[in-house]
Length: 329
Ligand code: UDP
Image (cartoon, rainbow, N blue to C red; front, side, top):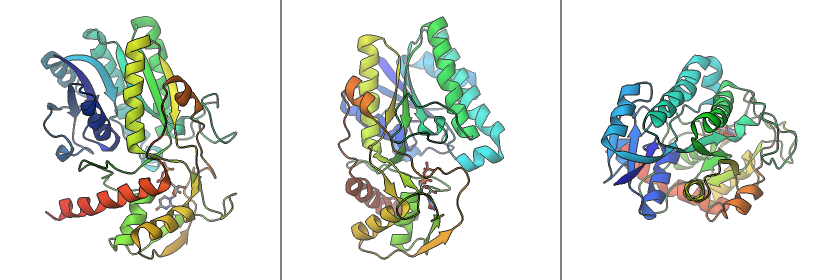
């Protein structure tokens, strides 16, 4: 039996990809160290608890399961933390990925799907951003992803490892069927924090700056439903298997919402008033980030099905009430 290995499959985006892979009847094994992942997210499929910093644990997993392709979601993703402690990010996101690729080489596994980010573009030179936008990441987190993207090009040339790279814009929302969703500790993302304020778990939401060059002064972002991201990974895997061509794609909804608009939408969906506090700008936040996703639509025939902002926030809201119960018990 052949397996798709999902590294970081107990995390937010990884667990949603596992759900989509299972719907397509792939055999899946999840590899996760559970530092940020949740054992509860992996049900009824093989789970291998291991760490990518321990190359023998990766080898043991490859010995145990006949792996045909790898999806790699294991990474630290707090931009602010990456500035304070870049070493942590370079080791975890770059060195550990090298370990994984090394073991793939040892076991002759040639298909790799990699989670990258729009943070590899750095400050936007034009909006919407397509894949032709120059890559000039402005923080260590973005650089780690940029470095791995480049490493993958060399590994393709020399070892024949084929790859698909996905550059996510703002992942949001939650599964409509399974008990999985965004569960970070600490939580730093806008939508879960605003919903915490709506449910009374937090008193208010601080808006990081209202003097940006946008209509209401707050930052505009492109929120893309995690199920649409997961679906793109299946299409990417199938494309790689069919054509053997490496490629890279943006994944975004191509629509932008300001922080104020997101808060208003959350008020509308939850029926609760949310107190807004205007705070300082957060370092490194560009005014506007919006994807041009025409390449993935054209090449992979992907289209977003759940990324209207209402579905994004409503699914996140439903997940939050489940999560609050889970945390209480
Ligand atoms: N944001 C905010 N208050 C918060 C968290 C985030 O105003 O408590 C803003 C943030 O400055 C950015 C947007 O919301 O403009 C989305 O931030 P998030 O951290 O969700 O995603 P990022 O864009 O950093 O990947």
